[in-house]
Length: 347
Ligand code: RIB
Ligand code: CA
Image 1 (cartoon, rainbow, N blue to C red):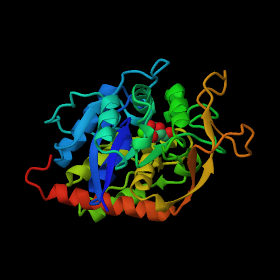
Image 2 (image 1 turned 180 degrees about the vertical axis):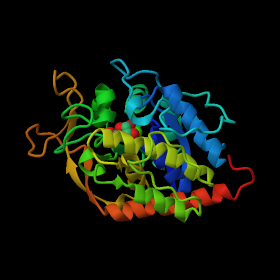
Image 3 (image 1 turned 60 degrees about the vertical axis):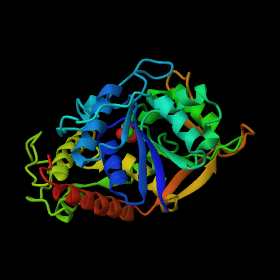
Image 4 (image 1 turned 135 degrees about the vertical axis):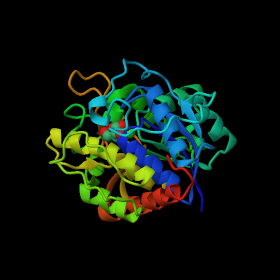
């Protein structure tokens, strides 16, 4: 069965892997890619999305530009995590396509109106554009078949403040409005993939080596903490070359932040859930977002004991088979890389 996906992202290194995963999946119809400001500014996100589609020769897919700033605060970005262009050390081809004439918010509204009940929403960045769309069209949530969000943290340290996760912390008001709009009036409960689980999806240099080997790329490069910083890939395969350059940056970032020479694959995991929710165990919850706390702004809160007396509005992802998720990611992205490598003049 085909899964038709609206992919709203703040491309980012792990967003890039999520995008490749979706492009690699034969059962996925990637309807539109929405570029949200977060890891880097929205226009930079948009350019990377166009660049990836140019590399993969999928210039048939729409890429929309989202709002330049969160709904109620200044934009914060994190080039130290994802690189100046959001793709680490990678350099993508100059896009041969341009962004859509419609905004990300309008694409959310129009696509779900054209295909009510059919589309799966996947958000791996701040919820800015989905919130703007719901403000303009409050009936939107009930038109989605499924919504998967990479975001939040509950019983696990934050990665942006002690208690908040990046995608929520960039735009807490948007996240609060989105969580309030789902789980009622026929709208599905979003599957929320928090750091509690996504920080278990750990890519290592060995995984990257397996990916290169599966793509028959040579040489098979396995970045190492002993490598000189910023060493560029010479992989024969055009997709593997970019991935090694992107993920190396991410390895270096995690090492510099005492996480080890690894990379958390937050967004590819959320993409796998969007395509097949059976890969994850969930628990029903009532979620809200702190927007005014001096220390806690951007914190996602799950009312697990019913203190608020409100109905559940989300499903929190709690467990998965981590090895199976990473094996699936490697297998599918490697097959995509092989297909791109077989095309004349892969870039
Ligand atoms: O906190 C991790 C999330 O924030 C990931 O989606 C990453 O790409 C950044 O957007
Ligand atoms: Ca992201």
